[in-house]
Amino acid sequence: MIATGQHFAGGANHEGGAQGAPVEPDAVFWSMSDDALLAALESSRNGLSIEDAWRRLARYGPNRLTEARTHPNLSLLRAQVRSPISLLLAAAATLSLVVGETVDGAIVHGILVVSGLLGFWQERRAAPGARACRVVRLAMART
Image 1 (tube, rainbow, N blue to C red):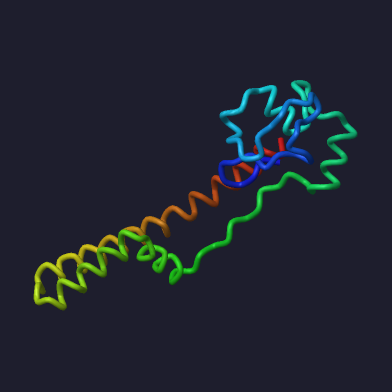
Image 2: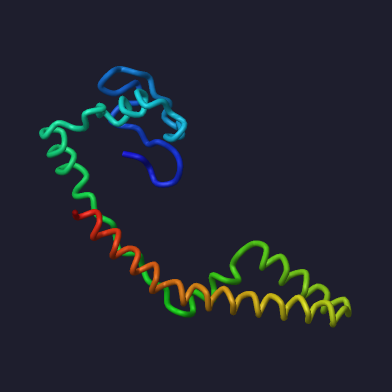
């Protein structure tokens, strides 16, 4: 019911939920009052009834975490140089080389290469830890 990102996707209607409170379709869910959020989610402070829970299970499916797609080395490396600031620095360094400022251009290119390799190395080392956290989170969600 809460959209990915930061905005509230709303229930079946945007005019209000069970208590009839009006809900803005683009309201940021953490800035909404408790009553407005519960109304928009068509829930209550006591939670869902068994019938509502079964209906939502049939409509939306089970509440499962999806396994994140793993990134091969090439895409991880490519992601390091795709940021706008990296592209801007690379363009500026190349322009420096073109206009004859070879030392400045080479230094900036060297910094970009080292930065990209460090970022790649950190991403590769963080991947097993992130997978372990997902396993723990899944185990906790099942209990």
